[in-house]
Image 1 (spheres, rainbow, N blue to C red):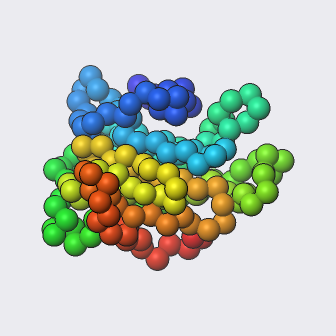
Image 2 (tube, rainbow, N blue to C red):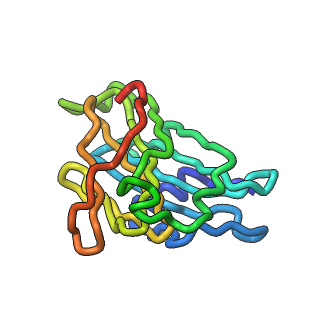
Image 3 (tube, helix red, strand yellow):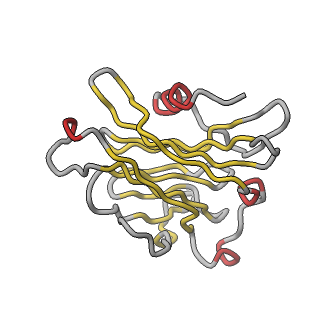
Length: 182
């Protein structure tokens, strides 16, 4: 049975905590992993059990309208077994965090504020075990025990993203693949 993406996303954005662990079973078919909000745009990430039983990573882009949050779109990918594995150490990953995916969806043009883009853009991140959070320009995005986070932005330029240790100490920038559209 599929989950209600909009309703589950709103729960996350209103403060429901994401799961600390990424575990699926016959009874647990989906878990919330991460969410981020930047003004009028947001992104949520879920792990779900696919029809074949393989883990699938789903990411949803949202926009805040006068009537509340609106689901704009997103995507999913099968074969995400690495998310179920233990988080790598900084020296093994050879970086504090790395990009594991990215995406974007078009916004409603009549909702744009000055300085905003016509797109909701995001990057999906896998962090080393030493990473407790991400510094995204002026905001902080937590990294839960499963080590997956997502960062959203609604401007033309990608924000500066750095990994932080348990006590807020800087661990280094997040590494990105050469992705068009950033």
